Length: 123
Image (tube, rainbow, N blue to C red; front, side, top):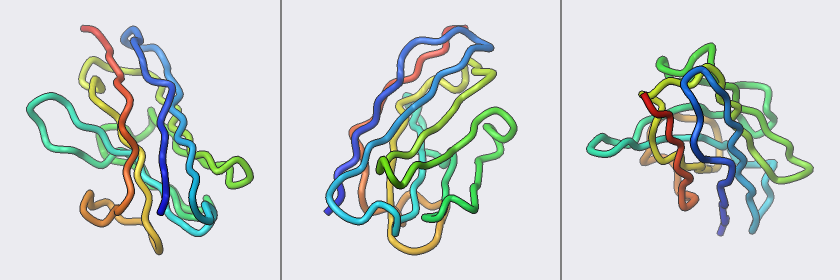
């Protein structure tokens, strides 16, 4: 079992920045791949970013490439999502998720999820 708790969401101006954190507990954090997904009202949950268990490989959805950065600190059992140049279309609930093995981009591949944190960027 893995427990994930996100924090850091809130209100940001267009062009601004936020940093999300996801603290994990319950098993060996360093052996699992971590991902961030988001879901806007009326839309399906979409892939945002993911990072391999060593942190050596990172992947991003097309809509956030060049603006968001995922990182992890295995000593702190925490994964981060630095979000820069925020846009109104980034408004969504952001979820942290994890899985064993290699990184994938599919929501259904991730077995453990946090409760989500709201990010709002007014237009």
